Length: 240
Image 1 (cartoon, rainbow, N blue to C red):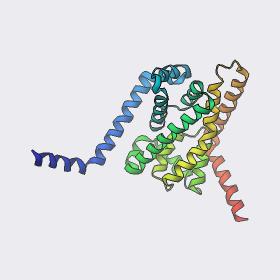
Image 2 (cartoon, rainbow, N blue to C red):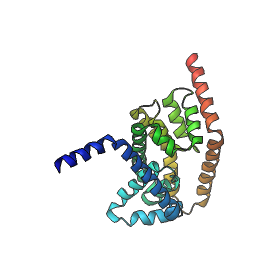
Image 3 (cartoon, helix red, strand yellow):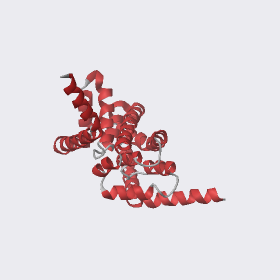
């Protein structure tokens, strides 16, 4: 019996990377099914998110952080409403802090997964269009600066970017540092917006929403051009 178990363990160890890759893919398929079939309408409404989070009572903070982690790892889940819900539930300061904690942990996991499993994982979960875009833009200059700009500019799929960074030349420490700092403005704005939902100041909310939407649209259509332009200016200053 001992020999059989040892033989089984040896075979398991031999194929552990393949097994884990399959488990990760099962996680993505299951999460995508649950999100699109059951929860997509809930995660579009900060009030519904609040009800779910607060149902955990004393563990509500942990539940919120875990939801934020899940959103980053399963990057097809939109994160803006969850960040807004953080401000709606906990206020601007603590909503921002909890979002940053969850997002940073989620980003670290995404980077770690792709760094360990490499291109076989990334090629399966990232669209060819996004892969082509990021592979092109990450090679135009200092990768630390580019990663910072990509996370800073609205409209770019930031959570998918964490997986791309895991197989790029940026190291883990720099990735966490630059991606987290660049995310701060967006997280603070989202949390502030959520905190002000019940303030009665509809004009302020409309202004914030309008500016955010405009920046998002600019980022979607002009993000690559903006990054390239900023990198050219940076090189021009360095040459002087």
